[in-house]
Image 1 (cartoon, rainbow, N blue to C red):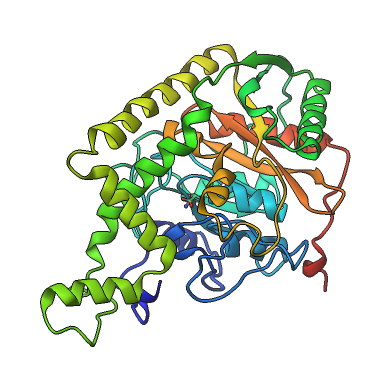
Image 2 (cartoon, protein in one colour; image 1 turned 180 degrees about the vertical axis):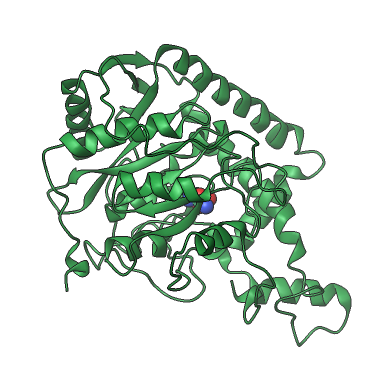
Length: 397
Ligand code: GLN
């Protein structure tokens, strides 16, 4: 964000320290939508990032640079954050693996807060084994993040290679409606067949409040963002307008100059839904529906071990295709944002290429802190899917 232009962090995020301690070689920072708000990286305040499979298409977002860097072979692994889909959706668009861990699994100390009840940090990798290795490094309690859980971290490699015979895979009918493109549907159905062939049992599950996901997400996320972004006021750090005559003008000008249009839109929406008179109708109502969404997952997981869905309704789109219509852009999160609202973990992994040679993403959702179970299923699919994703055209040297 321009509001942080020239700002240098005085300390490392916990995940960065953990990667350094594990011997990782840091190559650099990656492009993203400003303050992680977006689904295409077109809201970046600095530059454009293209999709390595088709340079006319977006890489997804908000962690578009992180996904594109792995798919374009410029980095082996990368790190991003996911508030409503920002790891899984770009991983799906770029044909790599992206995991959003359980809320509380990875410390967020040092992550710029967007929506604190939803944000999680997670890895982008080329395959499932690397994702498991990354989670061995990133996971665990951190005294600097009170929301990080004090739950033992298993060796995530342990479930790799275990078969899926007898495992119950839930398919929620609410994810397979007309909103899902035909090509995506057939790729996901083929992936389910592969798992069935490995001995998994397929069960129908219901997530009846799925339809409310986007509305609830965009109320809660914007409300929390408006509170979190209040700290960028020109007083403490970052950009300060040079033209202000008094303190009130300093706040207004600083924010108008420093924040891009989408960030301003979110702050205004969030302030509105929290304002007296509208709080009950929007924010409180959204919190209640969030509880129902969470309950949907609890109930579904009584019937199955993991839930399998598409990550996105369609493959990567061209630059500009949705940037004029915020609602159209928000609909990208239809299959991912409920996962954040429920706090459960989910991975996106490639399940083939469309006719236009763009990657399709398969989402595997797990019970809280059951990342190992996700890896087990994801690895079984990866090893038996019968095709090689190959290398993105822009990644070939
Ligand atoms: N696309 C969603 C948004 O714009 C999700 C962003 C994210 O997960 N950081 O809010």
